[in-house]
Image 1 (cartoon, rainbow, N blue to C red):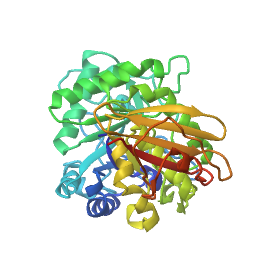
Image 2: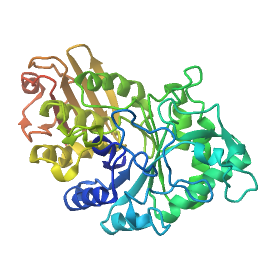
Image 3: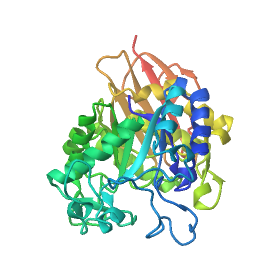
Length: 419
């Protein structure tokens, strides 16, 4: 099944602390683990001192102080993650997460710290220094922390060293950024493909099963085979936020990638901006999505087979949002044995299906993309038992379903049992 869990970004941006992570892990374990939500992911700049303190000027403060070891590898900021003060990195926090039956993940930027290159820092297992493997012509368009790594034996040694470190901490999931689409270079948007391969090899050498997630998108459809060979999930969109226009756009993105979903290989629709968001961005606020739009989002993500990462402050979650995230029938559509397919789409509606050769049931989702309630025709001559998965309502036939008004921006998700 695609990974499911919580990521700190949508609520905390760069400011998440150890106590924040523990609080959300406790909630996840106590309320959502039994529904398959198991990953706890610390997102960007966990190594940066003073992260978020100049948010009105910078999301990522240029030339800020970074916590780093003697081998040019970032360590957690001990002010925000006090259990790392003894040099154990994220080991104690990962142990806390694991003790609750969960898995632990971190965000990284591709490459090697610019600070390490400027200081001619050491690279574990080599006699070269960081400046010799850093590629100063390969940088992020939006984050000032890293240089790309050259495709050399010493460059591979650096990636091996950071993965060896992360594995010793107990990391189960890595979200690597500025790598799926290196949008600084529109003439070569997959310029870091060699770094994807280096990460993959480094993970294999650890002997630890670590999920590799690539960001940001949009991923390049012509590189689908490469993503699938070297990563587990890859973003098919840039950062996804709670705007109807962005959700509408995801129908086309999912259609483009619908033939590339399989066990262990997951095109990623990005996070679920539900509940309370925005503290690290300067304003705590509820999601802009209506309840119907949230159902549409979760239905599309699940039927398509995307990984699911909640972006909100979990302990602040209301009961209605919880009801979305704990609908076992909707979450069951995530099974990669069910192949997603868009049947049709226009400006008013979309119809999707997901079918498995091995199952005696399949799914059909009717999406109202218009601004007013409407009925959507569905007639594929199928027989069987028809159950709408959000309401639990049973229908006698497709004609009855086609006469049911669907709220604006809402959906009906039908499980068709053929026996």
